[in-house]
Length: 108
Image 1 (spheres, rainbow, N blue to C red):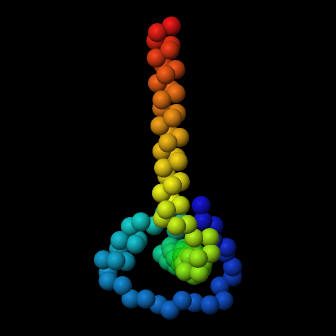
Image 2: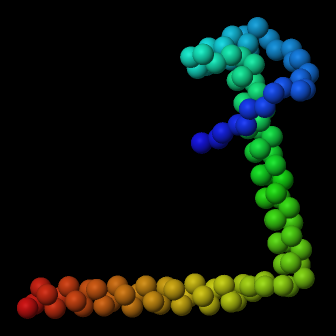
């Protein structure tokens, strides 16, 4: 759940013009006791938080790409496929063992 810190207001956002239908749709979804101003403030804060997180994720991705370009910690396709083959072999072995155990129980 997102909690927005309430402070004494020392700044205002610029007024925005919207179509009457847009305002009516916004007012229709207000919760009991919530003002349109509170709704807009919460929406702006959530969007700012989302964009900050998005920017941080993009920065991490760029760093990872730079590391990959330099070959730092980069897994080759052959390494990846070998690992997948090992996992598949292990899964096949587990299935064989479970089938054998089931057959033993059925026979016994």
